[in-house]
Amino acid sequence: MSQRTAIDARGRVGSHDVVWVTLDTLRLDVARTCFAEGRLPTLAQHMPATGFEACHTPGSFTYAAHAAFFAGFLPTPAQPGRHERLFALAFEGSETTGPHTAVLDGASVPQGLAALGYRTVCIGGVGFFNQRTPLGRALPALFDVALWEPAFGVTDPRSTEHQVAAALQELPADPSQRVFLFLNVSALHQPNCTYVDGATADSPKTMAAALHYVDRSLQPLLSAMAARGPSLWVVCSDHGTAYGEDGYTGHRIGHPSVYTVPFTAFVVPS
Image (cartoon, rainbow, N blue to C red; front, side):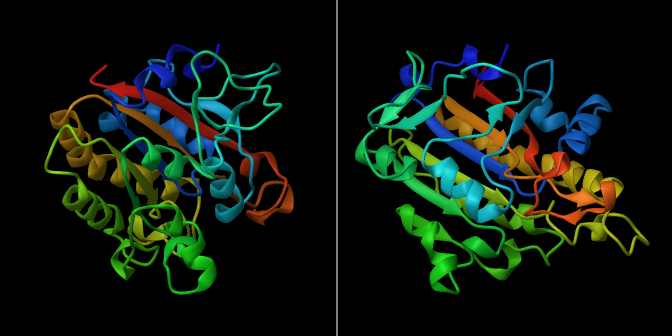
């Protein structure tokens, strides 16, 4: 059974803040190993005991995946069947909306939530959110507020801390003002070898070290959101990456290490 079947997104939109965290480039095997080894104490406090769910991403690289996410197509459970979505945009013929799906009016999930009174905030990470080019502004333009600076990007080993600090500054002072917070975590993306002393190349080991760092850095955000009131969280990867499997390296390819990703959803407080 999919984790999302236990979450009534339709019943929570309006009364809950909504937080989406994409752990950019995170592989399923790395995520599951870290969870099993107890290296994700922050997320594990709130995740189902089964850990990360295996899902298929709608895109093999950041832009494609997020364009689908913001259209309501989050990663789909990697098992046969018609899986009800958490969020959807109103359009005729949808076969994956159901009684628990939050169906929004608008051209994107951020715009649909904004129409319901949410303050929508994007904390960018990788280059597709850096707002330095027309392409880098396309996805952030969907939000009321979009922030990016080099300290949020892939070259800063403390990027997640900087991103979380910026996110905390953008939370409405009035706890009754609902917020949709999107955070694209860049630390898992290459180069992640900086998280292991002496490493000169990325690998599952260095990605695991980066994920452990990210988990620790998310604690202030989880605490702040809990202090505001209830929140619905989606935490997933947008795509994985290959580290030499079957001769492949990188992503934007149709390899299982790329298109099978970790996903979890939970409500805080649980």
